[in-house]
Length: 166
Image 1 (cartoon, helix red, strand yellow):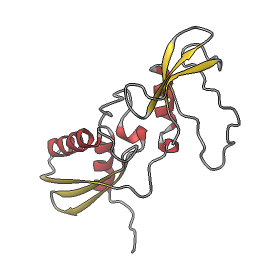
Image 2 (image 1 turned 135 degrees about the horizontal axis):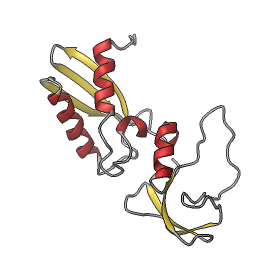
Image 3 (image 1 turned 180 degrees about the vertical axis):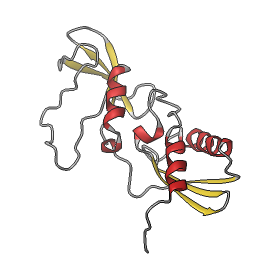
């Protein structure tokens, strides 16, 4: 299979699809979350969008697809097909640096990065997004969504979500 570089139109449509806010974490766009994998123009007015969920069975995938379809329809694309692509699997390393910054600013501890080229953290501690302390404790393995855990900081006593590493 030969892969070609995206056209200017495909890049524009990818940016539009990526600008959609995540339905569960509206502080992030789908591009910052790293779930929009590509856009291909199949014919005039007909596009295919590849979307990878944060985990198999993610309940937000339908809302993401509908929101992508809407933003592309609003841009004049008549036929939009959003396909769920499971390989390669999404990982928390797909979250952009800007996405990680926004998570912390929003009060959610971003996942630790295990991206190639960077050091693998040896500590299991999670930094509090409110005061920066690493003296935190797990309250629940699941929070408002399955991809987050609920933690509390022992220093400032504030509860916070932690986006779990995958």
